Length: 329
Length: 298
Image (cartoon, rainbow over all chains, first blue to last red; front, top):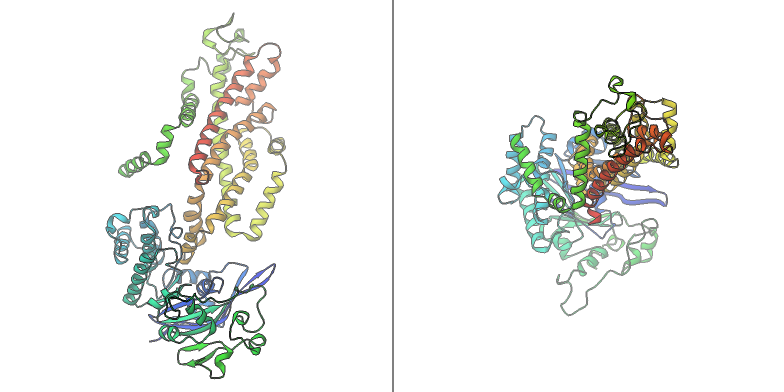
Protein backbone atom coordinates (compact mmCIF):
# COMPACT_ATOMS: atom_id res chain seq x y z
CA UNK A 1 0.00 0.00 0.00
CA UNK A 2 1.18 3.49 -0.74
CA UNK A 3 0.91 6.58 1.34
CA UNK A 4 -2.10 8.80 0.68
CA UNK A 5 -1.04 11.53 3.08
CA UNK A 6 2.37 12.49 4.37
CA UNK A 7 2.69 15.41 6.73
CA UNK A 8 6.10 16.73 7.68
CA UNK A 9 6.61 19.39 10.35
CA UNK A 10 3.12 20.82 10.14
CA UNK A 11 2.72 23.79 12.45
CA UNK A 12 -0.28 26.04 12.89
CA UNK A 13 0.28 29.12 15.02
CA UNK A 14 -2.34 31.68 15.92
CA UNK A 15 -0.89 35.13 16.36
CA UNK A 16 -3.06 36.97 18.86
CA UNK A 17 -2.64 40.07 20.98
CA UNK A 18 -1.90 37.94 24.01
CA UNK A 19 0.84 36.01 22.26
CA UNK A 20 1.33 33.13 19.91
CA UNK A 21 -0.77 30.02 20.38
CA UNK A 22 0.96 26.98 18.97
CA UNK A 23 -2.14 24.90 18.38
CA UNK A 24 -0.26 22.42 16.27
CA UNK A 25 3.46 22.38 16.80
CA UNK A 26 5.61 20.72 14.16
CA UNK A 27 3.89 17.39 13.85
CA UNK A 28 4.68 14.72 11.32
CA UNK A 29 2.61 11.72 10.45
CA UNK A 30 1.39 9.79 7.47
CA UNK A 31 -1.60 7.76 6.39
CA UNK A 32 -1.78 4.71 4.16
CA UNK A 33 -4.40 4.41 1.47
CA UNK A 34 -7.61 3.08 2.96
CA UNK A 35 -6.32 3.43 6.49
CA UNK A 36 -8.49 4.54 9.40
CA UNK A 37 -6.47 6.81 11.62
CA UNK A 38 -7.75 7.95 14.99
CA UNK A 39 -6.61 11.27 16.42
CA UNK A 40 -7.35 11.48 20.13
CA UNK A 41 -6.65 13.86 22.95
CA UNK A 42 -8.29 16.33 25.27
CA UNK A 43 -10.03 19.52 24.17
CA UNK A 44 -7.57 22.07 22.92
CA UNK A 45 -5.01 19.45 22.02
CA UNK A 46 -4.90 20.58 18.40
CA UNK A 47 -6.87 17.70 16.90
CA UNK A 48 -9.38 19.75 14.94
CA UNK A 49 -6.81 22.34 13.95
CA UNK A 50 -4.74 19.51 12.46
CA UNK A 51 -7.72 18.53 10.31
CA UNK A 52 -8.40 22.08 9.19
CA UNK A 53 -4.73 22.70 8.53
CA UNK A 54 -4.47 19.80 6.11
CA UNK A 55 -7.16 21.30 3.89
CA UNK A 56 -5.79 24.78 4.59
CA UNK A 57 -8.94 26.25 6.05
CA UNK A 58 -7.37 28.27 8.84
CA UNK A 59 -8.43 31.90 8.99
CA UNK A 60 -6.13 34.70 10.05
CA UNK A 61 -4.63 35.20 12.62
CA UNK A 62 -3.83 31.53 12.13
CA UNK A 63 -0.82 30.64 10.05
CA UNK A 64 0.07 27.24 8.65
CA UNK A 65 3.62 26.21 7.88
CA UNK A 66 4.95 22.83 6.93
CA UNK A 67 7.89 21.28 5.15
CA UNK A 68 5.31 19.53 3.06
CA UNK A 69 1.83 18.05 3.17
CA UNK A 70 1.87 15.43 0.46
CA UNK A 71 -1.56 14.28 -0.58
CA UNK A 72 -1.66 11.69 -3.31
CA UNK A 73 1.84 12.76 -4.33
CA UNK A 74 1.02 16.48 -4.50
CA UNK A 75 2.16 19.09 -2.04
CA UNK A 76 -0.94 20.85 -0.73
CA UNK A 77 1.12 23.67 0.75
CA UNK A 78 2.06 24.85 -2.73
CA UNK A 79 -1.47 24.85 -4.16
CA UNK A 80 -3.26 28.08 -4.97
CA UNK A 81 -6.58 28.78 -3.29
CA UNK A 82 -8.36 27.90 -6.52
CA UNK A 83 -6.61 24.57 -6.82
CA UNK A 84 -7.39 23.86 -3.17
CA UNK A 85 -11.08 24.51 -3.82
CA UNK A 86 -10.98 21.82 -6.46
CA UNK A 87 -9.48 19.34 -4.04
CA UNK A 88 -11.73 20.24 -1.14
CA UNK A 89 -14.99 18.40 -1.30
CA UNK A 90 -13.80 16.21 -4.12
CA UNK A 91 -10.64 14.42 -3.03
CA UNK A 92 -10.60 15.46 0.62
CA UNK A 93 -13.81 16.04 2.53
CA UNK A 94 -14.68 16.79 6.08
CA UNK A 95 -17.50 15.73 8.38
CA UNK A 96 -18.38 17.89 11.37
CA UNK A 97 -19.42 17.30 14.89
CA UNK A 98 -22.88 18.73 15.03
CA UNK A 99 -25.29 17.40 12.43
CA UNK A 100 -27.84 19.94 13.69
CA UNK A 101 -25.88 22.84 12.28
CA UNK A 102 -23.77 21.33 9.54
CA UNK A 103 -26.55 21.43 6.95
CA UNK A 104 -27.89 24.66 5.52
CA UNK A 105 -31.41 24.98 6.96
CA UNK A 106 -32.89 26.85 4.00
CA UNK A 107 -32.26 24.33 1.23
CA UNK A 108 -33.50 20.81 0.58
CA UNK A 109 -31.10 17.88 0.84
CA UNK A 110 -31.26 17.52 -2.93
CA UNK A 111 -29.92 21.01 -3.53
CA UNK A 112 -27.13 20.56 -1.06
CA UNK A 113 -25.97 17.32 -2.63
CA UNK A 114 -26.31 18.82 -6.09
CA UNK A 115 -24.10 21.70 -4.99
CA UNK A 116 -21.12 19.39 -4.51
CA UNK A 117 -21.86 17.42 -7.65
CA UNK A 118 -22.16 20.50 -9.86
CA UNK A 119 -19.02 21.99 -8.43
CA UNK A 120 -16.82 19.01 -9.10
CA UNK A 121 -18.49 17.57 -12.18
CA UNK A 122 -19.30 20.53 -14.40
CA UNK A 123 -21.99 19.80 -16.95
CA UNK A 124 -23.90 17.31 -14.85
CA UNK A 125 -27.63 17.52 -15.49
CA UNK A 126 -30.35 17.99 -12.92
CA UNK A 127 -31.70 14.51 -13.48
CA UNK A 128 -28.24 13.00 -13.03
CA UNK A 129 -27.79 14.98 -9.84
CA UNK A 130 -31.03 13.64 -8.47
CA UNK A 131 -30.24 10.06 -9.44
CA UNK A 132 -26.79 10.29 -7.87
CA UNK A 133 -28.24 11.96 -4.77
CA UNK A 134 -30.78 9.17 -4.28
CA UNK A 135 -28.06 6.61 -4.79
CA UNK A 136 -25.88 8.29 -2.15
CA UNK A 137 -28.72 8.49 0.36
CA UNK A 138 -29.42 4.80 -0.17
CA UNK A 139 -25.77 4.02 0.39
CA UNK A 140 -25.79 5.70 3.78
CA UNK A 141 -28.93 3.82 4.71
CA UNK A 142 -31.65 6.42 4.49
CA UNK A 143 -34.95 4.63 3.84
CA UNK A 144 -37.29 5.94 1.16
CA UNK A 145 -34.52 8.02 -0.37
CA UNK A 146 -36.63 9.10 -3.37
CA UNK A 147 -38.97 11.01 -1.09
CA UNK A 148 -36.51 12.04 1.60
CA UNK A 149 -34.22 13.82 -0.84
CA UNK A 150 -36.86 16.52 -1.18
CA UNK A 151 -36.90 17.19 2.58
CA UNK A 152 -35.30 20.01 4.50
CA UNK A 153 -32.68 19.33 7.20
CA UNK A 154 -35.09 20.02 10.07
CA UNK A 155 -37.25 17.15 8.89
CA UNK A 156 -34.50 14.66 9.75
CA UNK A 157 -33.42 13.33 13.13
CA UNK A 158 -29.85 13.87 14.34
CA UNK A 159 -28.61 10.45 13.29
CA UNK A 160 -30.26 10.75 9.88
CA UNK A 161 -28.75 14.17 9.40
CA UNK A 162 -25.30 12.83 10.11
CA UNK A 163 -25.96 10.19 7.46
CA UNK A 164 -26.89 12.95 5.03
CA UNK A 165 -23.68 14.77 5.91
CA UNK A 166 -21.75 11.58 5.21
CA UNK A 167 -23.59 11.21 1.91
CA UNK A 168 -22.53 14.72 0.94
CA UNK A 169 -18.95 13.91 1.94
CA UNK A 170 -19.03 10.89 -0.36
CA UNK A 171 -20.50 12.85 -3.27
CA UNK A 172 -17.13 13.63 -4.77
CA UNK A 173 -14.60 10.87 -5.13
CA UNK A 174 -12.86 11.27 -1.79
CA UNK A 175 -9.51 9.67 -1.11
CA UNK A 176 -9.43 11.09 2.38
CA UNK A 177 -12.26 11.92 4.74
CA UNK A 178 -11.51 13.98 7.82
CA UNK A 179 -14.23 13.39 10.40
CA UNK A 180 -14.15 15.90 13.24
CA UNK A 181 -15.93 14.30 16.18
CA UNK A 182 -18.62 12.88 13.89
CA UNK A 183 -20.45 10.97 16.59
CA UNK A 184 -20.06 13.20 19.62
CA UNK A 185 -23.49 14.77 19.25
CA UNK A 186 -25.26 11.44 18.77
CA UNK A 187 -26.49 9.01 21.39
CA UNK A 188 -24.65 5.71 21.79
CA UNK A 189 -26.90 3.47 19.70
CA UNK A 190 -26.87 5.87 16.77
CA UNK A 191 -23.17 6.43 17.36
CA UNK A 192 -22.48 2.74 16.86
CA UNK A 193 -24.60 2.67 13.69
CA UNK A 194 -22.91 5.70 12.20
CA UNK A 195 -19.46 4.36 13.02
CA UNK A 196 -20.21 1.01 11.43
CA UNK A 197 -21.59 2.81 8.40
CA UNK A 198 -18.47 4.94 8.06
CA UNK A 199 -16.21 1.98 8.48
CA UNK A 200 -18.10 0.02 5.83
CA UNK A 201 -18.16 2.89 3.32
CA UNK A 202 -14.52 3.65 3.81
CA UNK A 203 -13.46 0.08 3.15
CA UNK A 204 -15.84 -0.24 0.18
CA UNK A 205 -14.53 2.89 -1.47
CA UNK A 206 -10.95 2.42 -0.40
CA UNK A 207 -10.61 5.91 0.98
CA UNK A 208 -8.70 6.83 4.09
CA UNK A 209 -10.45 8.17 7.15
CA UNK A 210 -9.00 10.48 9.76
CA UNK A 211 -11.23 10.21 12.78
CA UNK A 212 -10.79 13.06 15.22
CA UNK A 213 -12.32 12.26 18.58
CA UNK A 214 -11.81 12.42 22.32
CA UNK A 215 -13.51 9.08 22.76
CA UNK A 216 -11.07 6.18 22.98
CA UNK A 217 -13.95 3.70 22.86
CA UNK A 218 -14.83 4.98 19.40
CA UNK A 219 -11.20 4.75 18.40
CA UNK A 220 -10.77 1.19 19.58
CA UNK A 221 -13.85 0.18 17.63
CA UNK A 222 -12.94 1.23 14.12
CA UNK A 223 -9.43 2.62 13.72
CA UNK A 224 -6.29 0.88 12.45
CA UNK A 225 -3.87 3.31 13.99
CA UNK A 226 -4.00 6.09 16.56
CA UNK A 227 -2.21 9.39 17.04
CA UNK A 228 -2.47 10.70 20.57
CA UNK A 229 -2.18 14.48 20.68
CA UNK A 230 -1.41 16.70 23.63
CA UNK A 231 -0.90 20.46 23.44
CA UNK A 232 -0.19 20.47 19.75
CA UNK A 233 2.21 17.55 19.76
CA UNK A 234 1.74 13.96 18.75
CA UNK A 235 2.91 12.20 21.90
CA UNK A 236 2.30 8.69 20.72
CA UNK A 237 1.45 7.01 17.45
CA UNK A 238 0.78 3.30 17.27
CA UNK A 239 -1.40 0.59 15.76
CA UNK A 240 -4.68 0.61 17.72
CA UNK A 241 -4.35 -2.83 19.26
CA UNK A 242 -0.82 -2.23 20.46
CA UNK A 243 -1.70 1.18 21.82
CA UNK A 244 -4.58 -0.14 23.88
CA UNK A 245 -2.79 -3.22 25.11
CA UNK A 246 0.54 -1.61 25.79
CA UNK A 247 0.44 2.18 25.95
CA UNK A 248 3.88 3.73 26.22
CA UNK A 249 3.30 7.39 26.93
CA UNK A 250 2.04 8.21 30.44
CA UNK A 251 -0.64 10.43 28.88
CA UNK A 252 -1.99 7.56 26.80
CA UNK A 253 -1.99 5.38 29.88
CA UNK A 254 -3.88 8.05 31.75
CA UNK A 255 -6.47 8.32 29.00
CA UNK A 256 -6.99 4.57 28.93
CA UNK A 257 -7.17 4.29 32.70
CA UNK A 258 -9.90 6.89 32.81
CA UNK A 259 -12.33 4.83 30.72
CA UNK A 260 -14.83 3.03 32.93
CA UNK A 261 -14.89 -0.73 32.49
CA UNK A 262 -11.97 -0.76 30.09
CA UNK A 263 -10.28 -3.59 31.93
CA UNK A 264 -7.60 -1.31 33.23
CA UNK A 265 -9.89 -0.39 36.09
CA UNK A 266 -11.56 -2.87 38.40
CA UNK A 267 -15.28 -2.52 38.96
CA UNK A 268 -15.04 -1.63 42.64
CA UNK A 269 -12.23 0.88 42.31
CA UNK A 270 -12.57 4.56 41.79
CA UNK A 271 -11.79 5.74 38.29
CA UNK A 272 -8.29 6.95 37.81
CA UNK A 273 -7.97 10.48 36.54
CA UNK A 274 -5.16 12.48 35.06
CA UNK A 275 -4.44 15.12 37.69
CA UNK A 276 -4.37 18.77 36.81
CA UNK A 277 -5.59 20.69 33.78
CA UNK A 278 -4.45 21.18 30.21
CA UNK A 279 -1.91 24.01 30.53
CA UNK A 280 -2.64 27.50 29.30
CA UNK A 281 -1.72 27.60 25.63
CA UNK A 282 -0.11 31.01 26.03
CA UNK A 283 2.18 29.75 28.72
CA UNK A 284 3.32 26.23 27.97
CA UNK A 285 5.86 24.42 30.13
CA UNK A 286 9.39 24.54 28.84
CA UNK A 287 10.20 20.86 28.59
CA UNK A 288 7.66 18.11 28.02
CA UNK A 289 4.21 19.68 27.85
CA UNK A 290 2.79 16.86 29.91
CA UNK A 291 5.42 17.06 32.66
CA UNK A 292 3.34 19.00 35.23
CA UNK A 293 0.64 16.35 35.20
CA UNK A 294 2.82 13.31 34.76
CA UNK A 295 3.23 10.81 37.57
CA UNK A 296 6.53 9.57 36.16
CA UNK A 297 7.97 13.03 35.65
CA UNK A 298 11.74 13.23 35.87
CA UNK A 299 14.22 16.07 36.09
CA UNK A 300 14.97 15.97 32.37
CA UNK A 301 11.26 16.23 31.50
CA UNK A 302 11.04 19.74 32.91
CA UNK A 303 14.15 20.86 31.08
CA UNK A 304 14.13 19.41 27.63
CA UNK A 305 11.39 18.56 25.15
CA UNK A 306 11.42 14.84 24.40
CA UNK A 307 12.20 13.84 20.84
CA UNK A 308 9.96 11.56 18.87
CA UNK A 309 11.56 8.14 18.72
CA UNK A 310 10.58 5.09 16.77
CA UNK A 311 10.17 2.23 19.18
CA UNK A 312 9.23 -0.39 16.65
CA UNK A 313 8.05 -0.13 13.04
CA UNK A 314 4.94 2.04 12.91
CA UNK A 315 5.22 2.97 16.54
CA UNK A 316 6.47 6.37 17.69
CA UNK A 317 6.46 7.97 21.07
CA UNK A 318 7.73 11.25 22.44
CA UNK A 319 8.72 10.61 26.01
CA UNK A 320 11.99 10.61 27.93
CA UNK A 321 10.90 7.46 29.73
CA UNK A 322 11.11 5.43 26.55
CA UNK A 323 14.31 6.92 25.25
CA UNK A 324 16.45 4.74 27.46
CA UNK A 325 14.87 1.49 26.39
CA UNK A 326 12.54 1.37 29.37
CA UNK A 327 9.64 0.40 27.19
CA UNK A 328 7.84 -1.84 29.60
CA UNK A 329 7.47 0.61 32.41
CA UNK B 1 -44.16 26.07 -13.10
CA UNK B 2 -47.78 26.66 -12.15
CA UNK B 3 -47.69 23.36 -10.36
CA UNK B 4 -44.69 24.26 -8.26
CA UNK B 5 -46.22 27.65 -7.45
CA UNK B 6 -49.34 25.90 -6.26
CA UNK B 7 -47.21 23.57 -4.16
CA UNK B 8 -45.41 26.50 -2.57
CA UNK B 9 -48.72 28.18 -1.87
CA UNK B 10 -49.99 24.99 -0.25
CA UNK B 11 -46.91 24.69 1.92
CA UNK B 12 -47.30 28.32 2.95
CA UNK B 13 -50.92 27.69 3.88
CA UNK B 14 -49.86 24.75 6.01
CA UNK B 15 -47.15 26.70 7.80
CA UNK B 16 -47.14 27.97 11.35
CA UNK B 17 -46.56 31.46 10.02
CA UNK B 18 -49.84 31.39 8.13
CA UNK B 19 -51.72 29.96 11.10
CA UNK B 20 -50.42 32.73 13.35
CA UNK B 21 -51.14 35.33 10.71
CA UNK B 22 -54.75 34.25 10.45
CA UNK B 23 -55.22 34.41 14.19
CA UNK B 24 -53.51 37.75 14.71
CA UNK B 25 -55.90 40.72 14.64
CA UNK B 26 -52.97 43.10 14.43
CA UNK B 27 -51.60 41.44 11.32
CA UNK B 28 -55.02 41.26 9.67
CA UNK B 29 -55.83 44.89 10.47
CA UNK B 30 -52.50 46.18 9.21
CA UNK B 31 -52.64 44.16 6.00
CA UNK B 32 -56.20 45.31 5.37
CA UNK B 33 -55.15 48.93 5.85
CA UNK B 34 -52.16 48.48 3.58
CA UNK B 35 -54.28 46.85 0.92
CA UNK B 36 -56.67 49.80 0.97
CA UNK B 37 -53.78 52.28 0.85
CA UNK B 38 -52.19 50.44 -2.09
CA UNK B 39 -55.53 50.15 -3.85
CA UNK B 40 -56.10 53.90 -3.48
CA UNK B 41 -52.62 54.70 -4.73
CA UNK B 42 -52.95 52.44 -7.78
CA UNK B 43 -56.61 52.82 -8.74
CA UNK B 44 -57.45 56.00 -6.79
CA UNK B 45 -57.31 58.30 -9.82
CA UNK B 46 -60.36 56.45 -11.20
CA UNK B 47 -62.45 57.77 -8.32
CA UNK B 48 -61.08 61.22 -7.71
CA UNK B 49 -63.23 64.13 -8.94
CA UNK B 50 -60.24 65.81 -10.60
CA UNK B 51 -56.58 65.44 -11.45
CA UNK B 52 -55.18 67.89 -8.93
CA UNK B 53 -52.10 68.66 -10.98
CA UNK B 54 -53.90 69.34 -14.22
CA UNK B 55 -54.40 73.07 -13.76
CA UNK B 56 -57.15 73.20 -16.35
CA UNK B 57 -59.36 70.96 -14.22
CA UNK B 58 -59.11 73.33 -11.26
CA UNK B 59 -61.53 76.12 -10.62
CA UNK B 60 -60.31 78.99 -8.49
CA UNK B 61 -63.84 79.77 -7.41
CA UNK B 62 -63.75 76.51 -5.45
CA UNK B 63 -60.81 77.75 -3.32
CA UNK B 64 -60.84 76.90 0.39
CA UNK B 65 -64.08 74.98 0.44
CA UNK B 66 -64.49 73.38 3.89
CA UNK B 67 -64.88 69.63 4.27
CA UNK B 68 -68.34 68.08 4.01
CA UNK B 69 -70.81 68.49 5.82
CA UNK B 70 -69.79 71.95 6.98
CA UNK B 71 -71.58 74.97 5.71
CA UNK B 72 -70.64 76.05 2.21
CA UNK B 73 -69.05 72.68 1.38
CA UNK B 74 -69.38 70.72 -1.84
CA UNK B 75 -70.08 66.98 -1.37
CA UNK B 76 -67.87 66.25 -4.40
CA UNK B 77 -64.91 67.65 -2.48
CA UNK B 78 -65.67 65.98 0.83
CA UNK B 79 -62.27 66.76 2.35
CA UNK B 80 -62.41 70.37 1.21
CA UNK B 81 -60.13 72.25 -1.18
CA UNK B 82 -57.02 74.38 -1.02
CA UNK B 83 -56.30 77.87 -2.24
CA UNK B 84 -56.32 76.87 -5.90
CA UNK B 85 -59.63 75.02 -5.62
CA UNK B 86 -57.79 71.70 -5.61
CA UNK B 87 -59.65 68.77 -4.05
CA UNK B 88 -57.76 67.61 -0.93
CA UNK B 89 -58.83 63.98 -1.35
CA UNK B 90 -57.53 63.91 -4.93
CA UNK B 91 -54.30 65.53 -3.82
CA UNK B 92 -53.88 62.92 -1.09
CA UNK B 93 -54.43 60.04 -3.52
CA UNK B 94 -51.87 61.45 -5.95
CA UNK B 95 -49.52 62.46 -3.17
CA UNK B 96 -49.59 59.00 -1.58
CA UNK B 97 -48.29 57.60 -4.85
CA UNK B 98 -45.18 59.73 -4.59
CA UNK B 99 -44.77 58.98 -0.88
CA UNK B 100 -45.17 55.22 -1.24
CA UNK B 101 -42.92 55.14 -4.29
CA UNK B 102 -40.19 56.94 -2.40
CA UNK B 103 -40.66 54.75 0.67
CA UNK B 104 -40.54 51.43 -1.17
CA UNK B 105 -37.92 52.23 -3.80
CA UNK B 106 -35.82 54.03 -1.20
CA UNK B 107 -35.80 50.94 0.99
CA UNK B 108 -34.92 48.69 -1.95
CA UNK B 109 -31.98 50.91 -2.85
CA UNK B 110 -30.64 51.40 0.63
CA UNK B 111 -31.13 47.78 1.64
CA UNK B 112 -29.16 46.73 -1.44
CA UNK B 113 -26.30 49.02 -0.44
CA UNK B 114 -26.53 48.12 3.24
CA UNK B 115 -26.73 44.37 2.68
CA UNK B 116 -23.79 44.46 0.31
CA UNK B 117 -21.56 46.38 2.70
CA UNK B 118 -22.81 44.48 5.75
CA UNK B 119 -22.11 41.08 4.26
CA UNK B 120 -18.67 42.16 3.11
CA UNK B 121 -17.85 43.47 6.57
CA UNK B 122 -19.23 40.45 8.38
CA UNK B 123 -17.86 37.78 6.08
CA UNK B 124 -14.40 39.06 5.35
CA UNK B 125 -13.78 40.97 8.57
CA UNK B 126 -10.38 42.57 9.07
CA UNK B 127 -9.65 46.07 7.83
CA UNK B 128 -12.66 46.05 5.48
CA UNK B 129 -14.93 45.43 8.45
CA UNK B 130 -13.26 48.17 10.46
CA UNK B 131 -13.49 50.63 7.59
CA UNK B 132 -17.17 50.04 6.87
CA UNK B 133 -18.23 49.93 10.49
CA UNK B 134 -16.28 53.04 11.50
CA UNK B 135 -17.90 54.84 8.59
CA UNK B 136 -21.25 53.65 9.90
CA UNK B 137 -20.38 54.80 13.42
CA UNK B 138 -19.43 58.24 12.19
CA UNK B 139 -22.64 58.53 10.26
CA UNK B 140 -24.69 57.34 13.23
CA UNK B 141 -23.30 60.11 15.38
CA UNK B 142 -25.29 62.60 13.30
CA UNK B 143 -29.11 62.64 13.34
CA UNK B 144 -30.28 61.08 10.09
CA UNK B 145 -32.60 63.98 9.29
CA UNK B 146 -29.62 66.34 9.48
CA UNK B 147 -27.67 64.27 6.98
CA UNK B 148 -30.69 64.05 4.72
CA UNK B 149 -31.17 67.84 4.85
CA UNK B 150 -27.51 68.42 4.16
CA UNK B 151 -27.57 66.06 1.17
CA UNK B 152 -30.79 67.52 -0.20
CA UNK B 153 -29.51 71.07 -0.03
CA UNK B 154 -26.41 69.92 -1.89
CA UNK B 155 -28.29 67.85 -4.49
CA UNK B 156 -31.37 70.01 -4.95
CA UNK B 157 -34.99 69.00 -5.09
CA UNK B 158 -36.23 65.99 -7.01
CA UNK B 159 -37.57 62.47 -6.50
CA UNK B 160 -34.31 60.91 -7.66
CA UNK B 161 -32.30 63.07 -5.30
CA UNK B 162 -34.57 62.20 -2.38
CA UNK B 163 -33.94 58.52 -3.15
CA UNK B 164 -30.18 59.06 -3.20
CA UNK B 165 -30.35 60.93 0.10
CA UNK B 166 -32.47 58.22 1.72
CA UNK B 167 -30.11 55.54 0.46
CA UNK B 168 -27.10 57.27 1.98
CA UNK B 169 -28.96 57.85 5.22
CA UNK B 170 -30.47 54.40 5.59
CA UNK B 171 -27.73 51.97 4.63
CA UNK B 172 -26.17 52.07 8.09
CA UNK B 173 -29.03 50.24 9.80
CA UNK B 174 -29.02 47.50 7.19
CA UNK B 175 -25.26 47.17 7.20
CA UNK B 176 -25.09 46.85 10.98
CA UNK B 177 -27.91 44.33 11.19
CA UNK B 178 -26.62 42.24 8.31
CA UNK B 179 -23.08 42.33 9.62
CA UNK B 180 -24.16 41.08 13.02
CA UNK B 181 -26.25 38.29 11.57
CA UNK B 182 -23.51 37.37 9.12
CA UNK B 183 -21.04 37.04 11.96
CA UNK B 184 -23.30 34.58 13.76
CA UNK B 185 -24.27 32.61 10.64
CA UNK B 186 -20.64 32.44 9.57
CA UNK B 187 -19.84 30.46 12.71
CA UNK B 188 -22.35 27.77 11.79
CA UNK B 189 -20.91 24.47 10.75
CA UNK B 190 -22.78 24.49 7.47
CA UNK B 191 -20.69 27.43 6.38
CA UNK B 192 -17.55 25.51 7.31
CA UNK B 193 -19.01 22.55 5.47
CA UNK B 194 -19.56 24.71 2.40
CA UNK B 195 -15.96 25.86 2.52
CA UNK B 196 -14.84 22.28 2.94
CA UNK B 197 -16.63 21.16 -0.20
CA UNK B 198 -14.71 23.83 -2.05
CA UNK B 199 -17.40 26.42 -2.73
CA UNK B 200 -16.02 29.84 -3.69
CA UNK B 201 -16.78 32.70 -1.28
CA UNK B 202 -19.34 34.44 -3.47
CA UNK B 203 -21.42 31.28 -3.69
CA UNK B 204 -21.23 30.81 0.07
CA UNK B 205 -22.39 34.37 0.61
CA UNK B 206 -25.25 34.14 -1.88
CA UNK B 207 -26.51 30.71 -0.97
CA UNK B 208 -25.51 30.14 2.65
CA UNK B 209 -25.24 33.52 4.35
CA UNK B 210 -27.89 35.68 2.68
CA UNK B 211 -30.83 33.25 2.86
CA UNK B 212 -30.13 32.76 6.54
CA UNK B 213 -30.07 36.47 7.35
CA UNK B 214 -33.09 37.21 5.15
CA UNK B 215 -35.65 37.17 7.96
CA UNK B 216 -34.07 40.06 9.81
CA UNK B 217 -33.71 41.95 6.56
CA UNK B 218 -37.42 41.50 5.83
CA UNK B 219 -38.40 42.83 9.24
CA UNK B 220 -36.04 45.78 9.06
CA UNK B 221 -37.05 46.66 5.51
CA UNK B 222 -40.73 46.71 6.43
CA UNK B 223 -40.15 49.06 9.33
CA UNK B 224 -37.85 51.18 7.24
CA UNK B 225 -40.53 51.90 4.61
CA UNK B 226 -42.49 53.74 7.29
CA UNK B 227 -39.43 55.63 8.47
CA UNK B 228 -38.55 56.70 4.95
CA UNK B 229 -42.05 57.98 4.24
CA UNK B 230 -41.71 60.08 7.38
CA UNK B 231 -38.25 61.39 6.47
CA UNK B 232 -39.42 62.26 2.99
CA UNK B 233 -42.48 64.03 4.44
CA UNK B 234 -40.22 66.00 6.76
CA UNK B 235 -37.91 66.97 3.92
CA UNK B 236 -40.78 68.03 1.71
CA UNK B 237 -42.38 69.91 4.58
CA UNK B 238 -39.15 71.85 4.95
CA UNK B 239 -39.11 72.51 1.22
CA UNK B 240 -36.13 70.26 0.60
CA UNK B 241 -37.86 67.22 -0.83
CA UNK B 242 -39.82 66.58 -3.98
CA UNK B 243 -40.50 69.33 -6.54
CA UNK B 244 -43.80 71.23 -6.53
CA UNK B 245 -44.86 69.39 -9.68
CA UNK B 246 -44.88 66.01 -7.95
CA UNK B 247 -46.13 66.82 -4.46
CA UNK B 248 -45.98 64.15 -1.80
CA UNK B 249 -48.03 64.00 1.37
CA UNK B 250 -45.41 65.97 3.26
CA UNK B 251 -45.54 68.80 0.77
CA UNK B 252 -49.33 68.92 0.99
CA UNK B 253 -49.00 69.36 4.75
CA UNK B 254 -46.53 72.12 4.23
CA UNK B 255 -48.82 73.91 1.73
CA UNK B 256 -51.69 73.91 4.17
CA UNK B 257 -49.57 74.79 7.15
CA UNK B 258 -49.35 78.43 6.06
CA UNK B 259 -53.09 78.85 6.37
CA UNK B 260 -53.73 76.44 9.23
CA UNK B 261 -53.93 79.09 11.94
CA UNK B 262 -56.36 81.01 9.81
CA UNK B 263 -58.90 78.27 10.58
CA UNK B 264 -58.37 76.46 7.27
CA UNK B 265 -57.11 73.35 9.08
CA UNK B 266 -58.28 70.71 6.60
CA UNK B 267 -55.72 71.57 3.95
CA UNK B 268 -52.92 70.39 6.22
CA UNK B 269 -54.57 67.97 8.64
CA UNK B 270 -55.98 65.42 6.19
CA UNK B 271 -52.68 64.71 4.40
CA UNK B 272 -51.01 64.55 7.82
CA UNK B 273 -53.54 62.04 9.09
CA UNK B 274 -53.03 59.93 6.01
CA UNK B 275 -49.27 59.80 6.68
CA UNK B 276 -50.07 58.64 10.20
CA UNK B 277 -52.34 55.87 8.91
CA UNK B 278 -49.78 54.63 6.39
CA UNK B 279 -46.88 54.57 8.83
CA UNK B 280 -49.06 53.04 11.53
CA UNK B 281 -50.16 50.19 9.26
CA UNK B 282 -46.58 49.51 8.12
CA UNK B 283 -45.23 49.50 11.65
CA UNK B 284 -47.95 47.17 12.88
CA UNK B 285 -47.10 44.73 10.12
CA UNK B 286 -43.41 45.12 10.90
CA UNK B 287 -44.04 44.35 14.56
CA UNK B 288 -45.95 41.23 13.65
CA UNK B 289 -43.20 40.07 11.28
CA UNK B 290 -40.56 40.71 13.90
CA UNK B 291 -42.38 38.64 16.50
CA UNK B 292 -43.04 35.89 13.99
CA UNK B 293 -39.74 35.67 12.17
CA UNK B 294 -37.33 36.25 15.02
CA UNK B 295 -36.76 32.88 16.68
CA UNK B 296 -35.03 34.57 19.59
CA UNK B 297 -38.23 36.27 20.70
CA UNK B 298 -40.23 33.05 20.75
